[in-house]
Length: 110
Image (cartoon, rainbow, N blue to C red; front, top):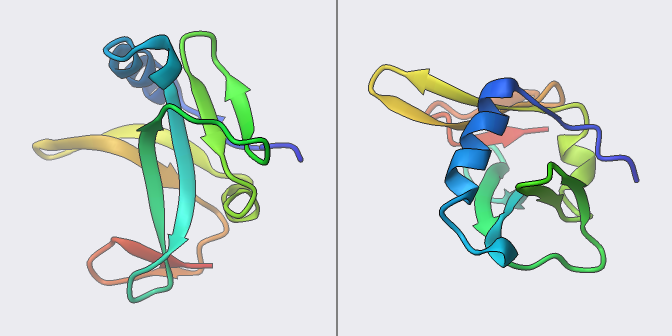
């Protein structure tokens, strides 16, 4: 299945910078969703050293974006960005499939 997930230039730059701190086996960034939160789902953005046979991945040379088969339909058409909001900065998923998010901004509904 086609991943159909975009990365902004900022996200690529920060991923290369952060993944450079890890061993070659751990230069994978896993994107996903889990059943959680008051709206139903939470995003997962984490480093991982495993890619399972059912995962889909995009190889960016210095790192890979990895998505499990459960999460892929929820993330189709999304954009991974790296944003600065006030004093905080983080990876953030912008997803056109979201219907709403909870008041605290942690969980989303599709």
